[in-house]
Length: 423
Image: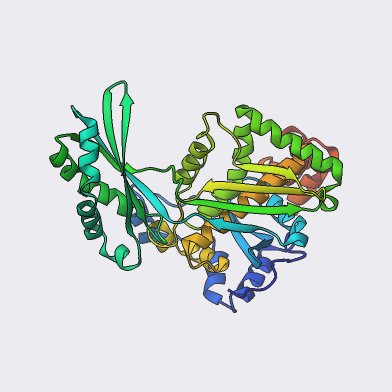
């Protein structure tokens, strides 16, 4: 994809056909990509049957582009799949407001995934732990044989950990296989390694092997992003102060932190879904990470700079891939990766973290100023118009009436539609 500016004035008010024309131009006149999006049904027939069991069709989710994004000095458009009004608009607006300070700057901890093997019924767990650690090279060889291609690509077993857990059912030994899965999310590879190693560990220790599966708490795959929003861009010192107080609320109260993080995941999950990755794994890992300190807390941190501007950071586990699974076989996921110009799981994780931070900024600013409903309901008005039966040009006319009246409800929508139709 052409690496040019992500600033696209008028993109939000353009027709879908016009937006597709812009996208086709960005993709070098790729008519096939344009056709894929135009028909809204790219996953049909045999592919659907092979992706899931008992297939009856597809459930399309709206796919849009977040504009204005600058990540590590690179301009980009970010595909986001979501059904929720205002999510993409919030990212676009947030990204525009920090462009003057260079946009988003990111880092990545690495592509290490943990597979767990649970060993039960041990009379001497400590002896078993030492036995396993002493045979690390044998375990490494077994894991390498499971996926030779991964090893050839520079991945494979990187570390071995043995934990002793005291549970209500007695002492357990839990073995962690720490595997570099490179550009794959890696679930299939590490699960197979765990299942291969488990009976051998049982033979060495006399344990009964039970669960053998990856952990979705991907704390070795942390993505981080930071950005600075000039006070003048966001409403001045009072807005900065109000946003900081909102952030402090999330740090002190898990009830608020849950909603704070839900907003972050609005952005993150939309990118994850658009690229064919596992939204449930990412959600589970993020929330588990948010609770590691003993109390559930926010995934972001906000502070005032010496110049009085607002600085935000995010740290979140993102076990993403660009090969394997639906990412490899879903045509829209492949197109979304092409739009991003992403050639590694690391790059995808960095971008996704930046989107999460942008989403959080947008939510905090809305909450600290006009409240979340003003912008959200303004965009939701079209959904209400459609729900009450508006069609064609009526949709925007009813939505405009709802916005003007300030009450975006179905009852008001029906009244507006009746009035429009002369009822």
